[in-house]
Length: 138
Length: 490
Image (tube, rainbow over all chains, first blue to last red):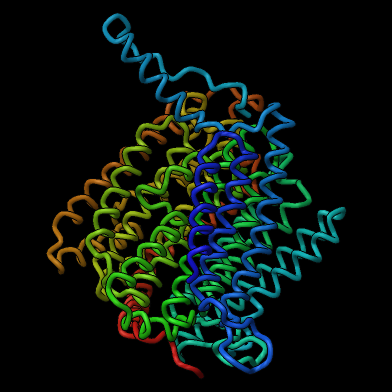
């Protein structure tokens, strides 16, 4: 495995992971793209020795074509998924005006209800129950 | 007989294409879907009978030699999963036809659903790791469409989490597949066990853990489950029902293949710890919730723990218990989500504090929830009891007392949260309802009938527990004994 390729895979994976941890969906999509490329290159690098010929003719040492077929399939699938993610990001933008990925709303509501109950403990023995659901309720 | 195998994928895909063309004729579209999935059910039963009698079926598509061909293999485990998957898909399809509302009328529901069916069958039949990856992609892509079908605020928010986490899962799986190929030079499930056994321990453990993380994300095991209770509840009820019943189980199916055939006995302690934590944390999470759909979603996680526990214990008895658990779990879990869907359709919400007194409005409907709920909690004589008994017996046999204790404690948690749903939704005075104090099922005949059929299926598992258990033992014997090779050519 060539050092250049190894470093490239490392940089791509690191950048992809950093982008994936962002709140903006657009950056997450870019991160997925970089990570997918890192994965593809890793499989490519693991499949053949440097300077092996690709599959041309029958002479000399040839790279194994199977991983290349795997990568080709993965590229196509990744392309489709990234386009779908972009569509979702666009939809999120048309709905809310931004593409921030939000936390689990219901979970935050539960935690807030618990905190409120703990704060009231003592003067309000009756269980007030959780507050009404936000407007998202159908 | 073996030439039937590709039909499981080809039929739904062709039907999906046809139903896209019929997008403006909803009736024709639904007929196509019902006929196709009905045919898949019949084919799956034929394959199951044949496989159980004559041994595994194996097919290299297009007559290519084994190393290049797309291989489809149906052994006992794959065949029984095919039957369960097809039956549940058919049941939920009928249920969706009975539902009213924006999303269920979407012209894209049926095509996406058929693609999902193709992906699920392809995953069960995959004879090599890469085709398993592709099958996962097919069913995931369809599930992305289904989970964001309505495209409203909630679904987009939760759908984003679901899609991103599954894309990461796919990347990890692809990486694992590529590295397995680099290490062994093959991807065939038949050749891999032997080649993997020759690898140095370090590399084998690395590959094993990478596959565990990828499939564990899909199955929603302990540290990797938090996406599930967030995203499943926002989808349409028929979508959630089929996701809850089938999708996580496909992760478990892949875990079974990994842990019994590819890396037998690897990571036993790790899996035991994960199983215990998954059961308890899923159960505790369920108790904290105040929404029926979310309680049930946390239960999916908890129940996955039991399946992983059987897998971790290893040996014929425990693996048989895991397979039985899956057979019990798929109809039971689906039935509970179908009940939830009727509640939501009738009252417009599934928040425990907004619904009440449904048992007084319809006793039969209350029973439809009660039976699978008790089964899930493991109360005799239901199928959940048999499944948990099998698991606990296997634990006794191997003297793994801790996991047995945790399993028993976690089923108490299950019971507790079922009681929570029961008191919240079914007991108490009925909430004022636009239609007055009338039955629930009367207004949702098709949905009610389908739910009843699913509940009956779950009960049938309990009635036929003996033969099913013996089948599970044969399956487990296959898996354990044939670890070096999965099925021979026929």
